[in-house]
Length: 305
Image (cartoon, rainbow, N blue to C red):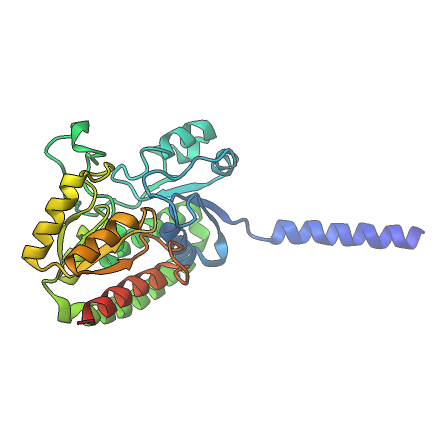
């Protein structure tokens, strides 16, 4: 009996010492799944990452769950898109978390839009114009070149949180950016034959993507941001698409298919369903896979006669 007790005590002591020797991980909560993947690529084994979104939600309205509050309470960093993208859910969650480390203005609050020049900054923030983003369009992560800025911001925040791992974070960052550069060159080549091609989407997710790859973002099915289309708007959109020979309609998974399918049918345009973050459609569980899917799907649709 004494031998068993001694063995158990020894095992418990060994486990305790192992736990002490185990380096603590930086606890990171991201708002969206693309930011979670970028953080994992930079942080590697030294981070523990959770995303509030799963990939299928509207980026502006991730449903708030009670489980998010303790998650944020324990977080060392909260990583967000910025440009007011998360205004409908994140401020309330941060207040409820009672975690001073991750409040705006503190080092644990990581706004990945820093260094990004926004598109579509409104002249007016009147709510009659819809769900207006006063700081500009927040969907810059659909431009992989601008995603590199997010990677840099994440890396800087991780180094500040765990400077003892700075060399690892820097090495991981550089390796991921090199991989991304190779992919960007391939995506540009794949979409190069379609330079100047016009397309519409349900929501205004795609201005940065269109500008990066030489496409023309023709407009949205929504009447205004966050406002469903009226019959008159749909009719006018169909008419202008026909006259301008717009060959592509994009539907994001967050929106119903009925109206985009009708517009595609009436105009003869191809209809594609494209994710706006990893996990939005099957086989897009990381940022590169998501962008690969978007580019390949769009190029395949535009190749068809």
